Length: 625
Image (cartoon, rainbow, N blue to C red; front, side, top):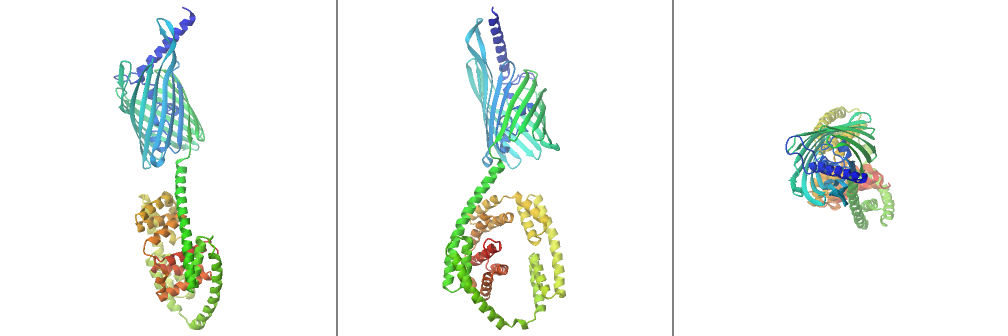
């Protein structure tokens, strides 16, 4: 026998022995006890997972979750891809690749493909080497779906298709895995039921079902020990039909978010590994000292790509905001045209104050309108001349210099302040008293009222803060936000209250509140819609979409009251005229106070609402004085 033929026969014998060893574990395990060989394929893939001793059901955070626990796919922040290569005894190789993507509200999906096999085994018949080669392979394809329930719990399902081929004989089988995952801070728990539904696979006359197995584990993930060093550890137990329990233990240290060192124990066999992380790319090496098939070296990499969950949420929020702004701009233009028409009507009637307000409102809503600016200038000049004549007439007829009403003013101020105190409007109450004391500084009634209201204000602050904290503790962020907003109105300079309110606002997303408001508005639940919009404005008072939606709600919440309703009351109409005159003279804050007082009586009057908005716009610098 030639040396060449002897080498071929030796290679063939080793190859057949290799196939036999693989077949011993390809479909299952020994029937009884703890003996028997686990299928290499059933031990999973992924260098990081195998380096941690297979303790990955509770730690999977990459695309390899498709095998280890599909429930973790629902916690992926970005798209994930991973690949693994390993060479076992002789030339047996395992190659795998996996991908996972979390579609947020739609759930997460994952795909993976793994192939274990040996090729190019020389076929021999009657000690003659045949020209064709033979081989053995097992391929596993998976499709996973996962969904999160709340911030902590998720469930995943994996469908599997297994294909086996030996010497040209082939067969398929199918199975289902069900995974559960739970996380809380750094703590993790995972459970997977593998092949809880499976079909028979047979090669030739040999057939059997894949054994059902389960694996449960607890882990601590990415716990910071010291600066630039974090630690992860997992302990898991695997129960396989027909076998004793198998323990999996793994630990990983991550230094400077770059270098990972790993170690573990898989069914009594030690495992080691290391990984290097560069931004979203990680390259891994693993070593398994396996008692049944010898030492195994593993190589692989993983990659995170695409937008993050936070970036996707921000884009959705921006899209909703853009839609809201588009609606608001369209609505503002229409309102500007309506304001021009009303202004012209008042101008025709000679009511120049009202005409000026509507021209200014139109200009603030849409500065591109050609009719507004020239009219504002012309009417302003006319009104200034008229104001000079009116002011002279008032001074001549009133005889104000002969009146002294300090004491009466003090009593009225105390009564008004007490009413404001009862409404928890302490700042306004104290302002009234301060104004009165500037005229009558020695009044004991004013001094006593200041002391009482200041004490009530401090007491109310303590009670309100306690109420807000209790609401925050039980997760009622809406009540907490409302309470902090009330506190901030009374204590605008209090940094702690402002910070607490900001923290509550961070718990609530403006776009979500506006979305809820829109649904309520579509259902004509105007009061509920207004509450959601006002809460959104507490978080972001300049939000264009929220302000536009609030205006729409206010117009819908009650039948519109025209300016005629005010003109029918002589006293109210006098206040309205005074406010319009103040606007014309640039005394915007005084005008705003009058509009606010009138709105308490006419809360849904569109004329007052628009006048108030126009003044607020001018005060904020949106339009020039």
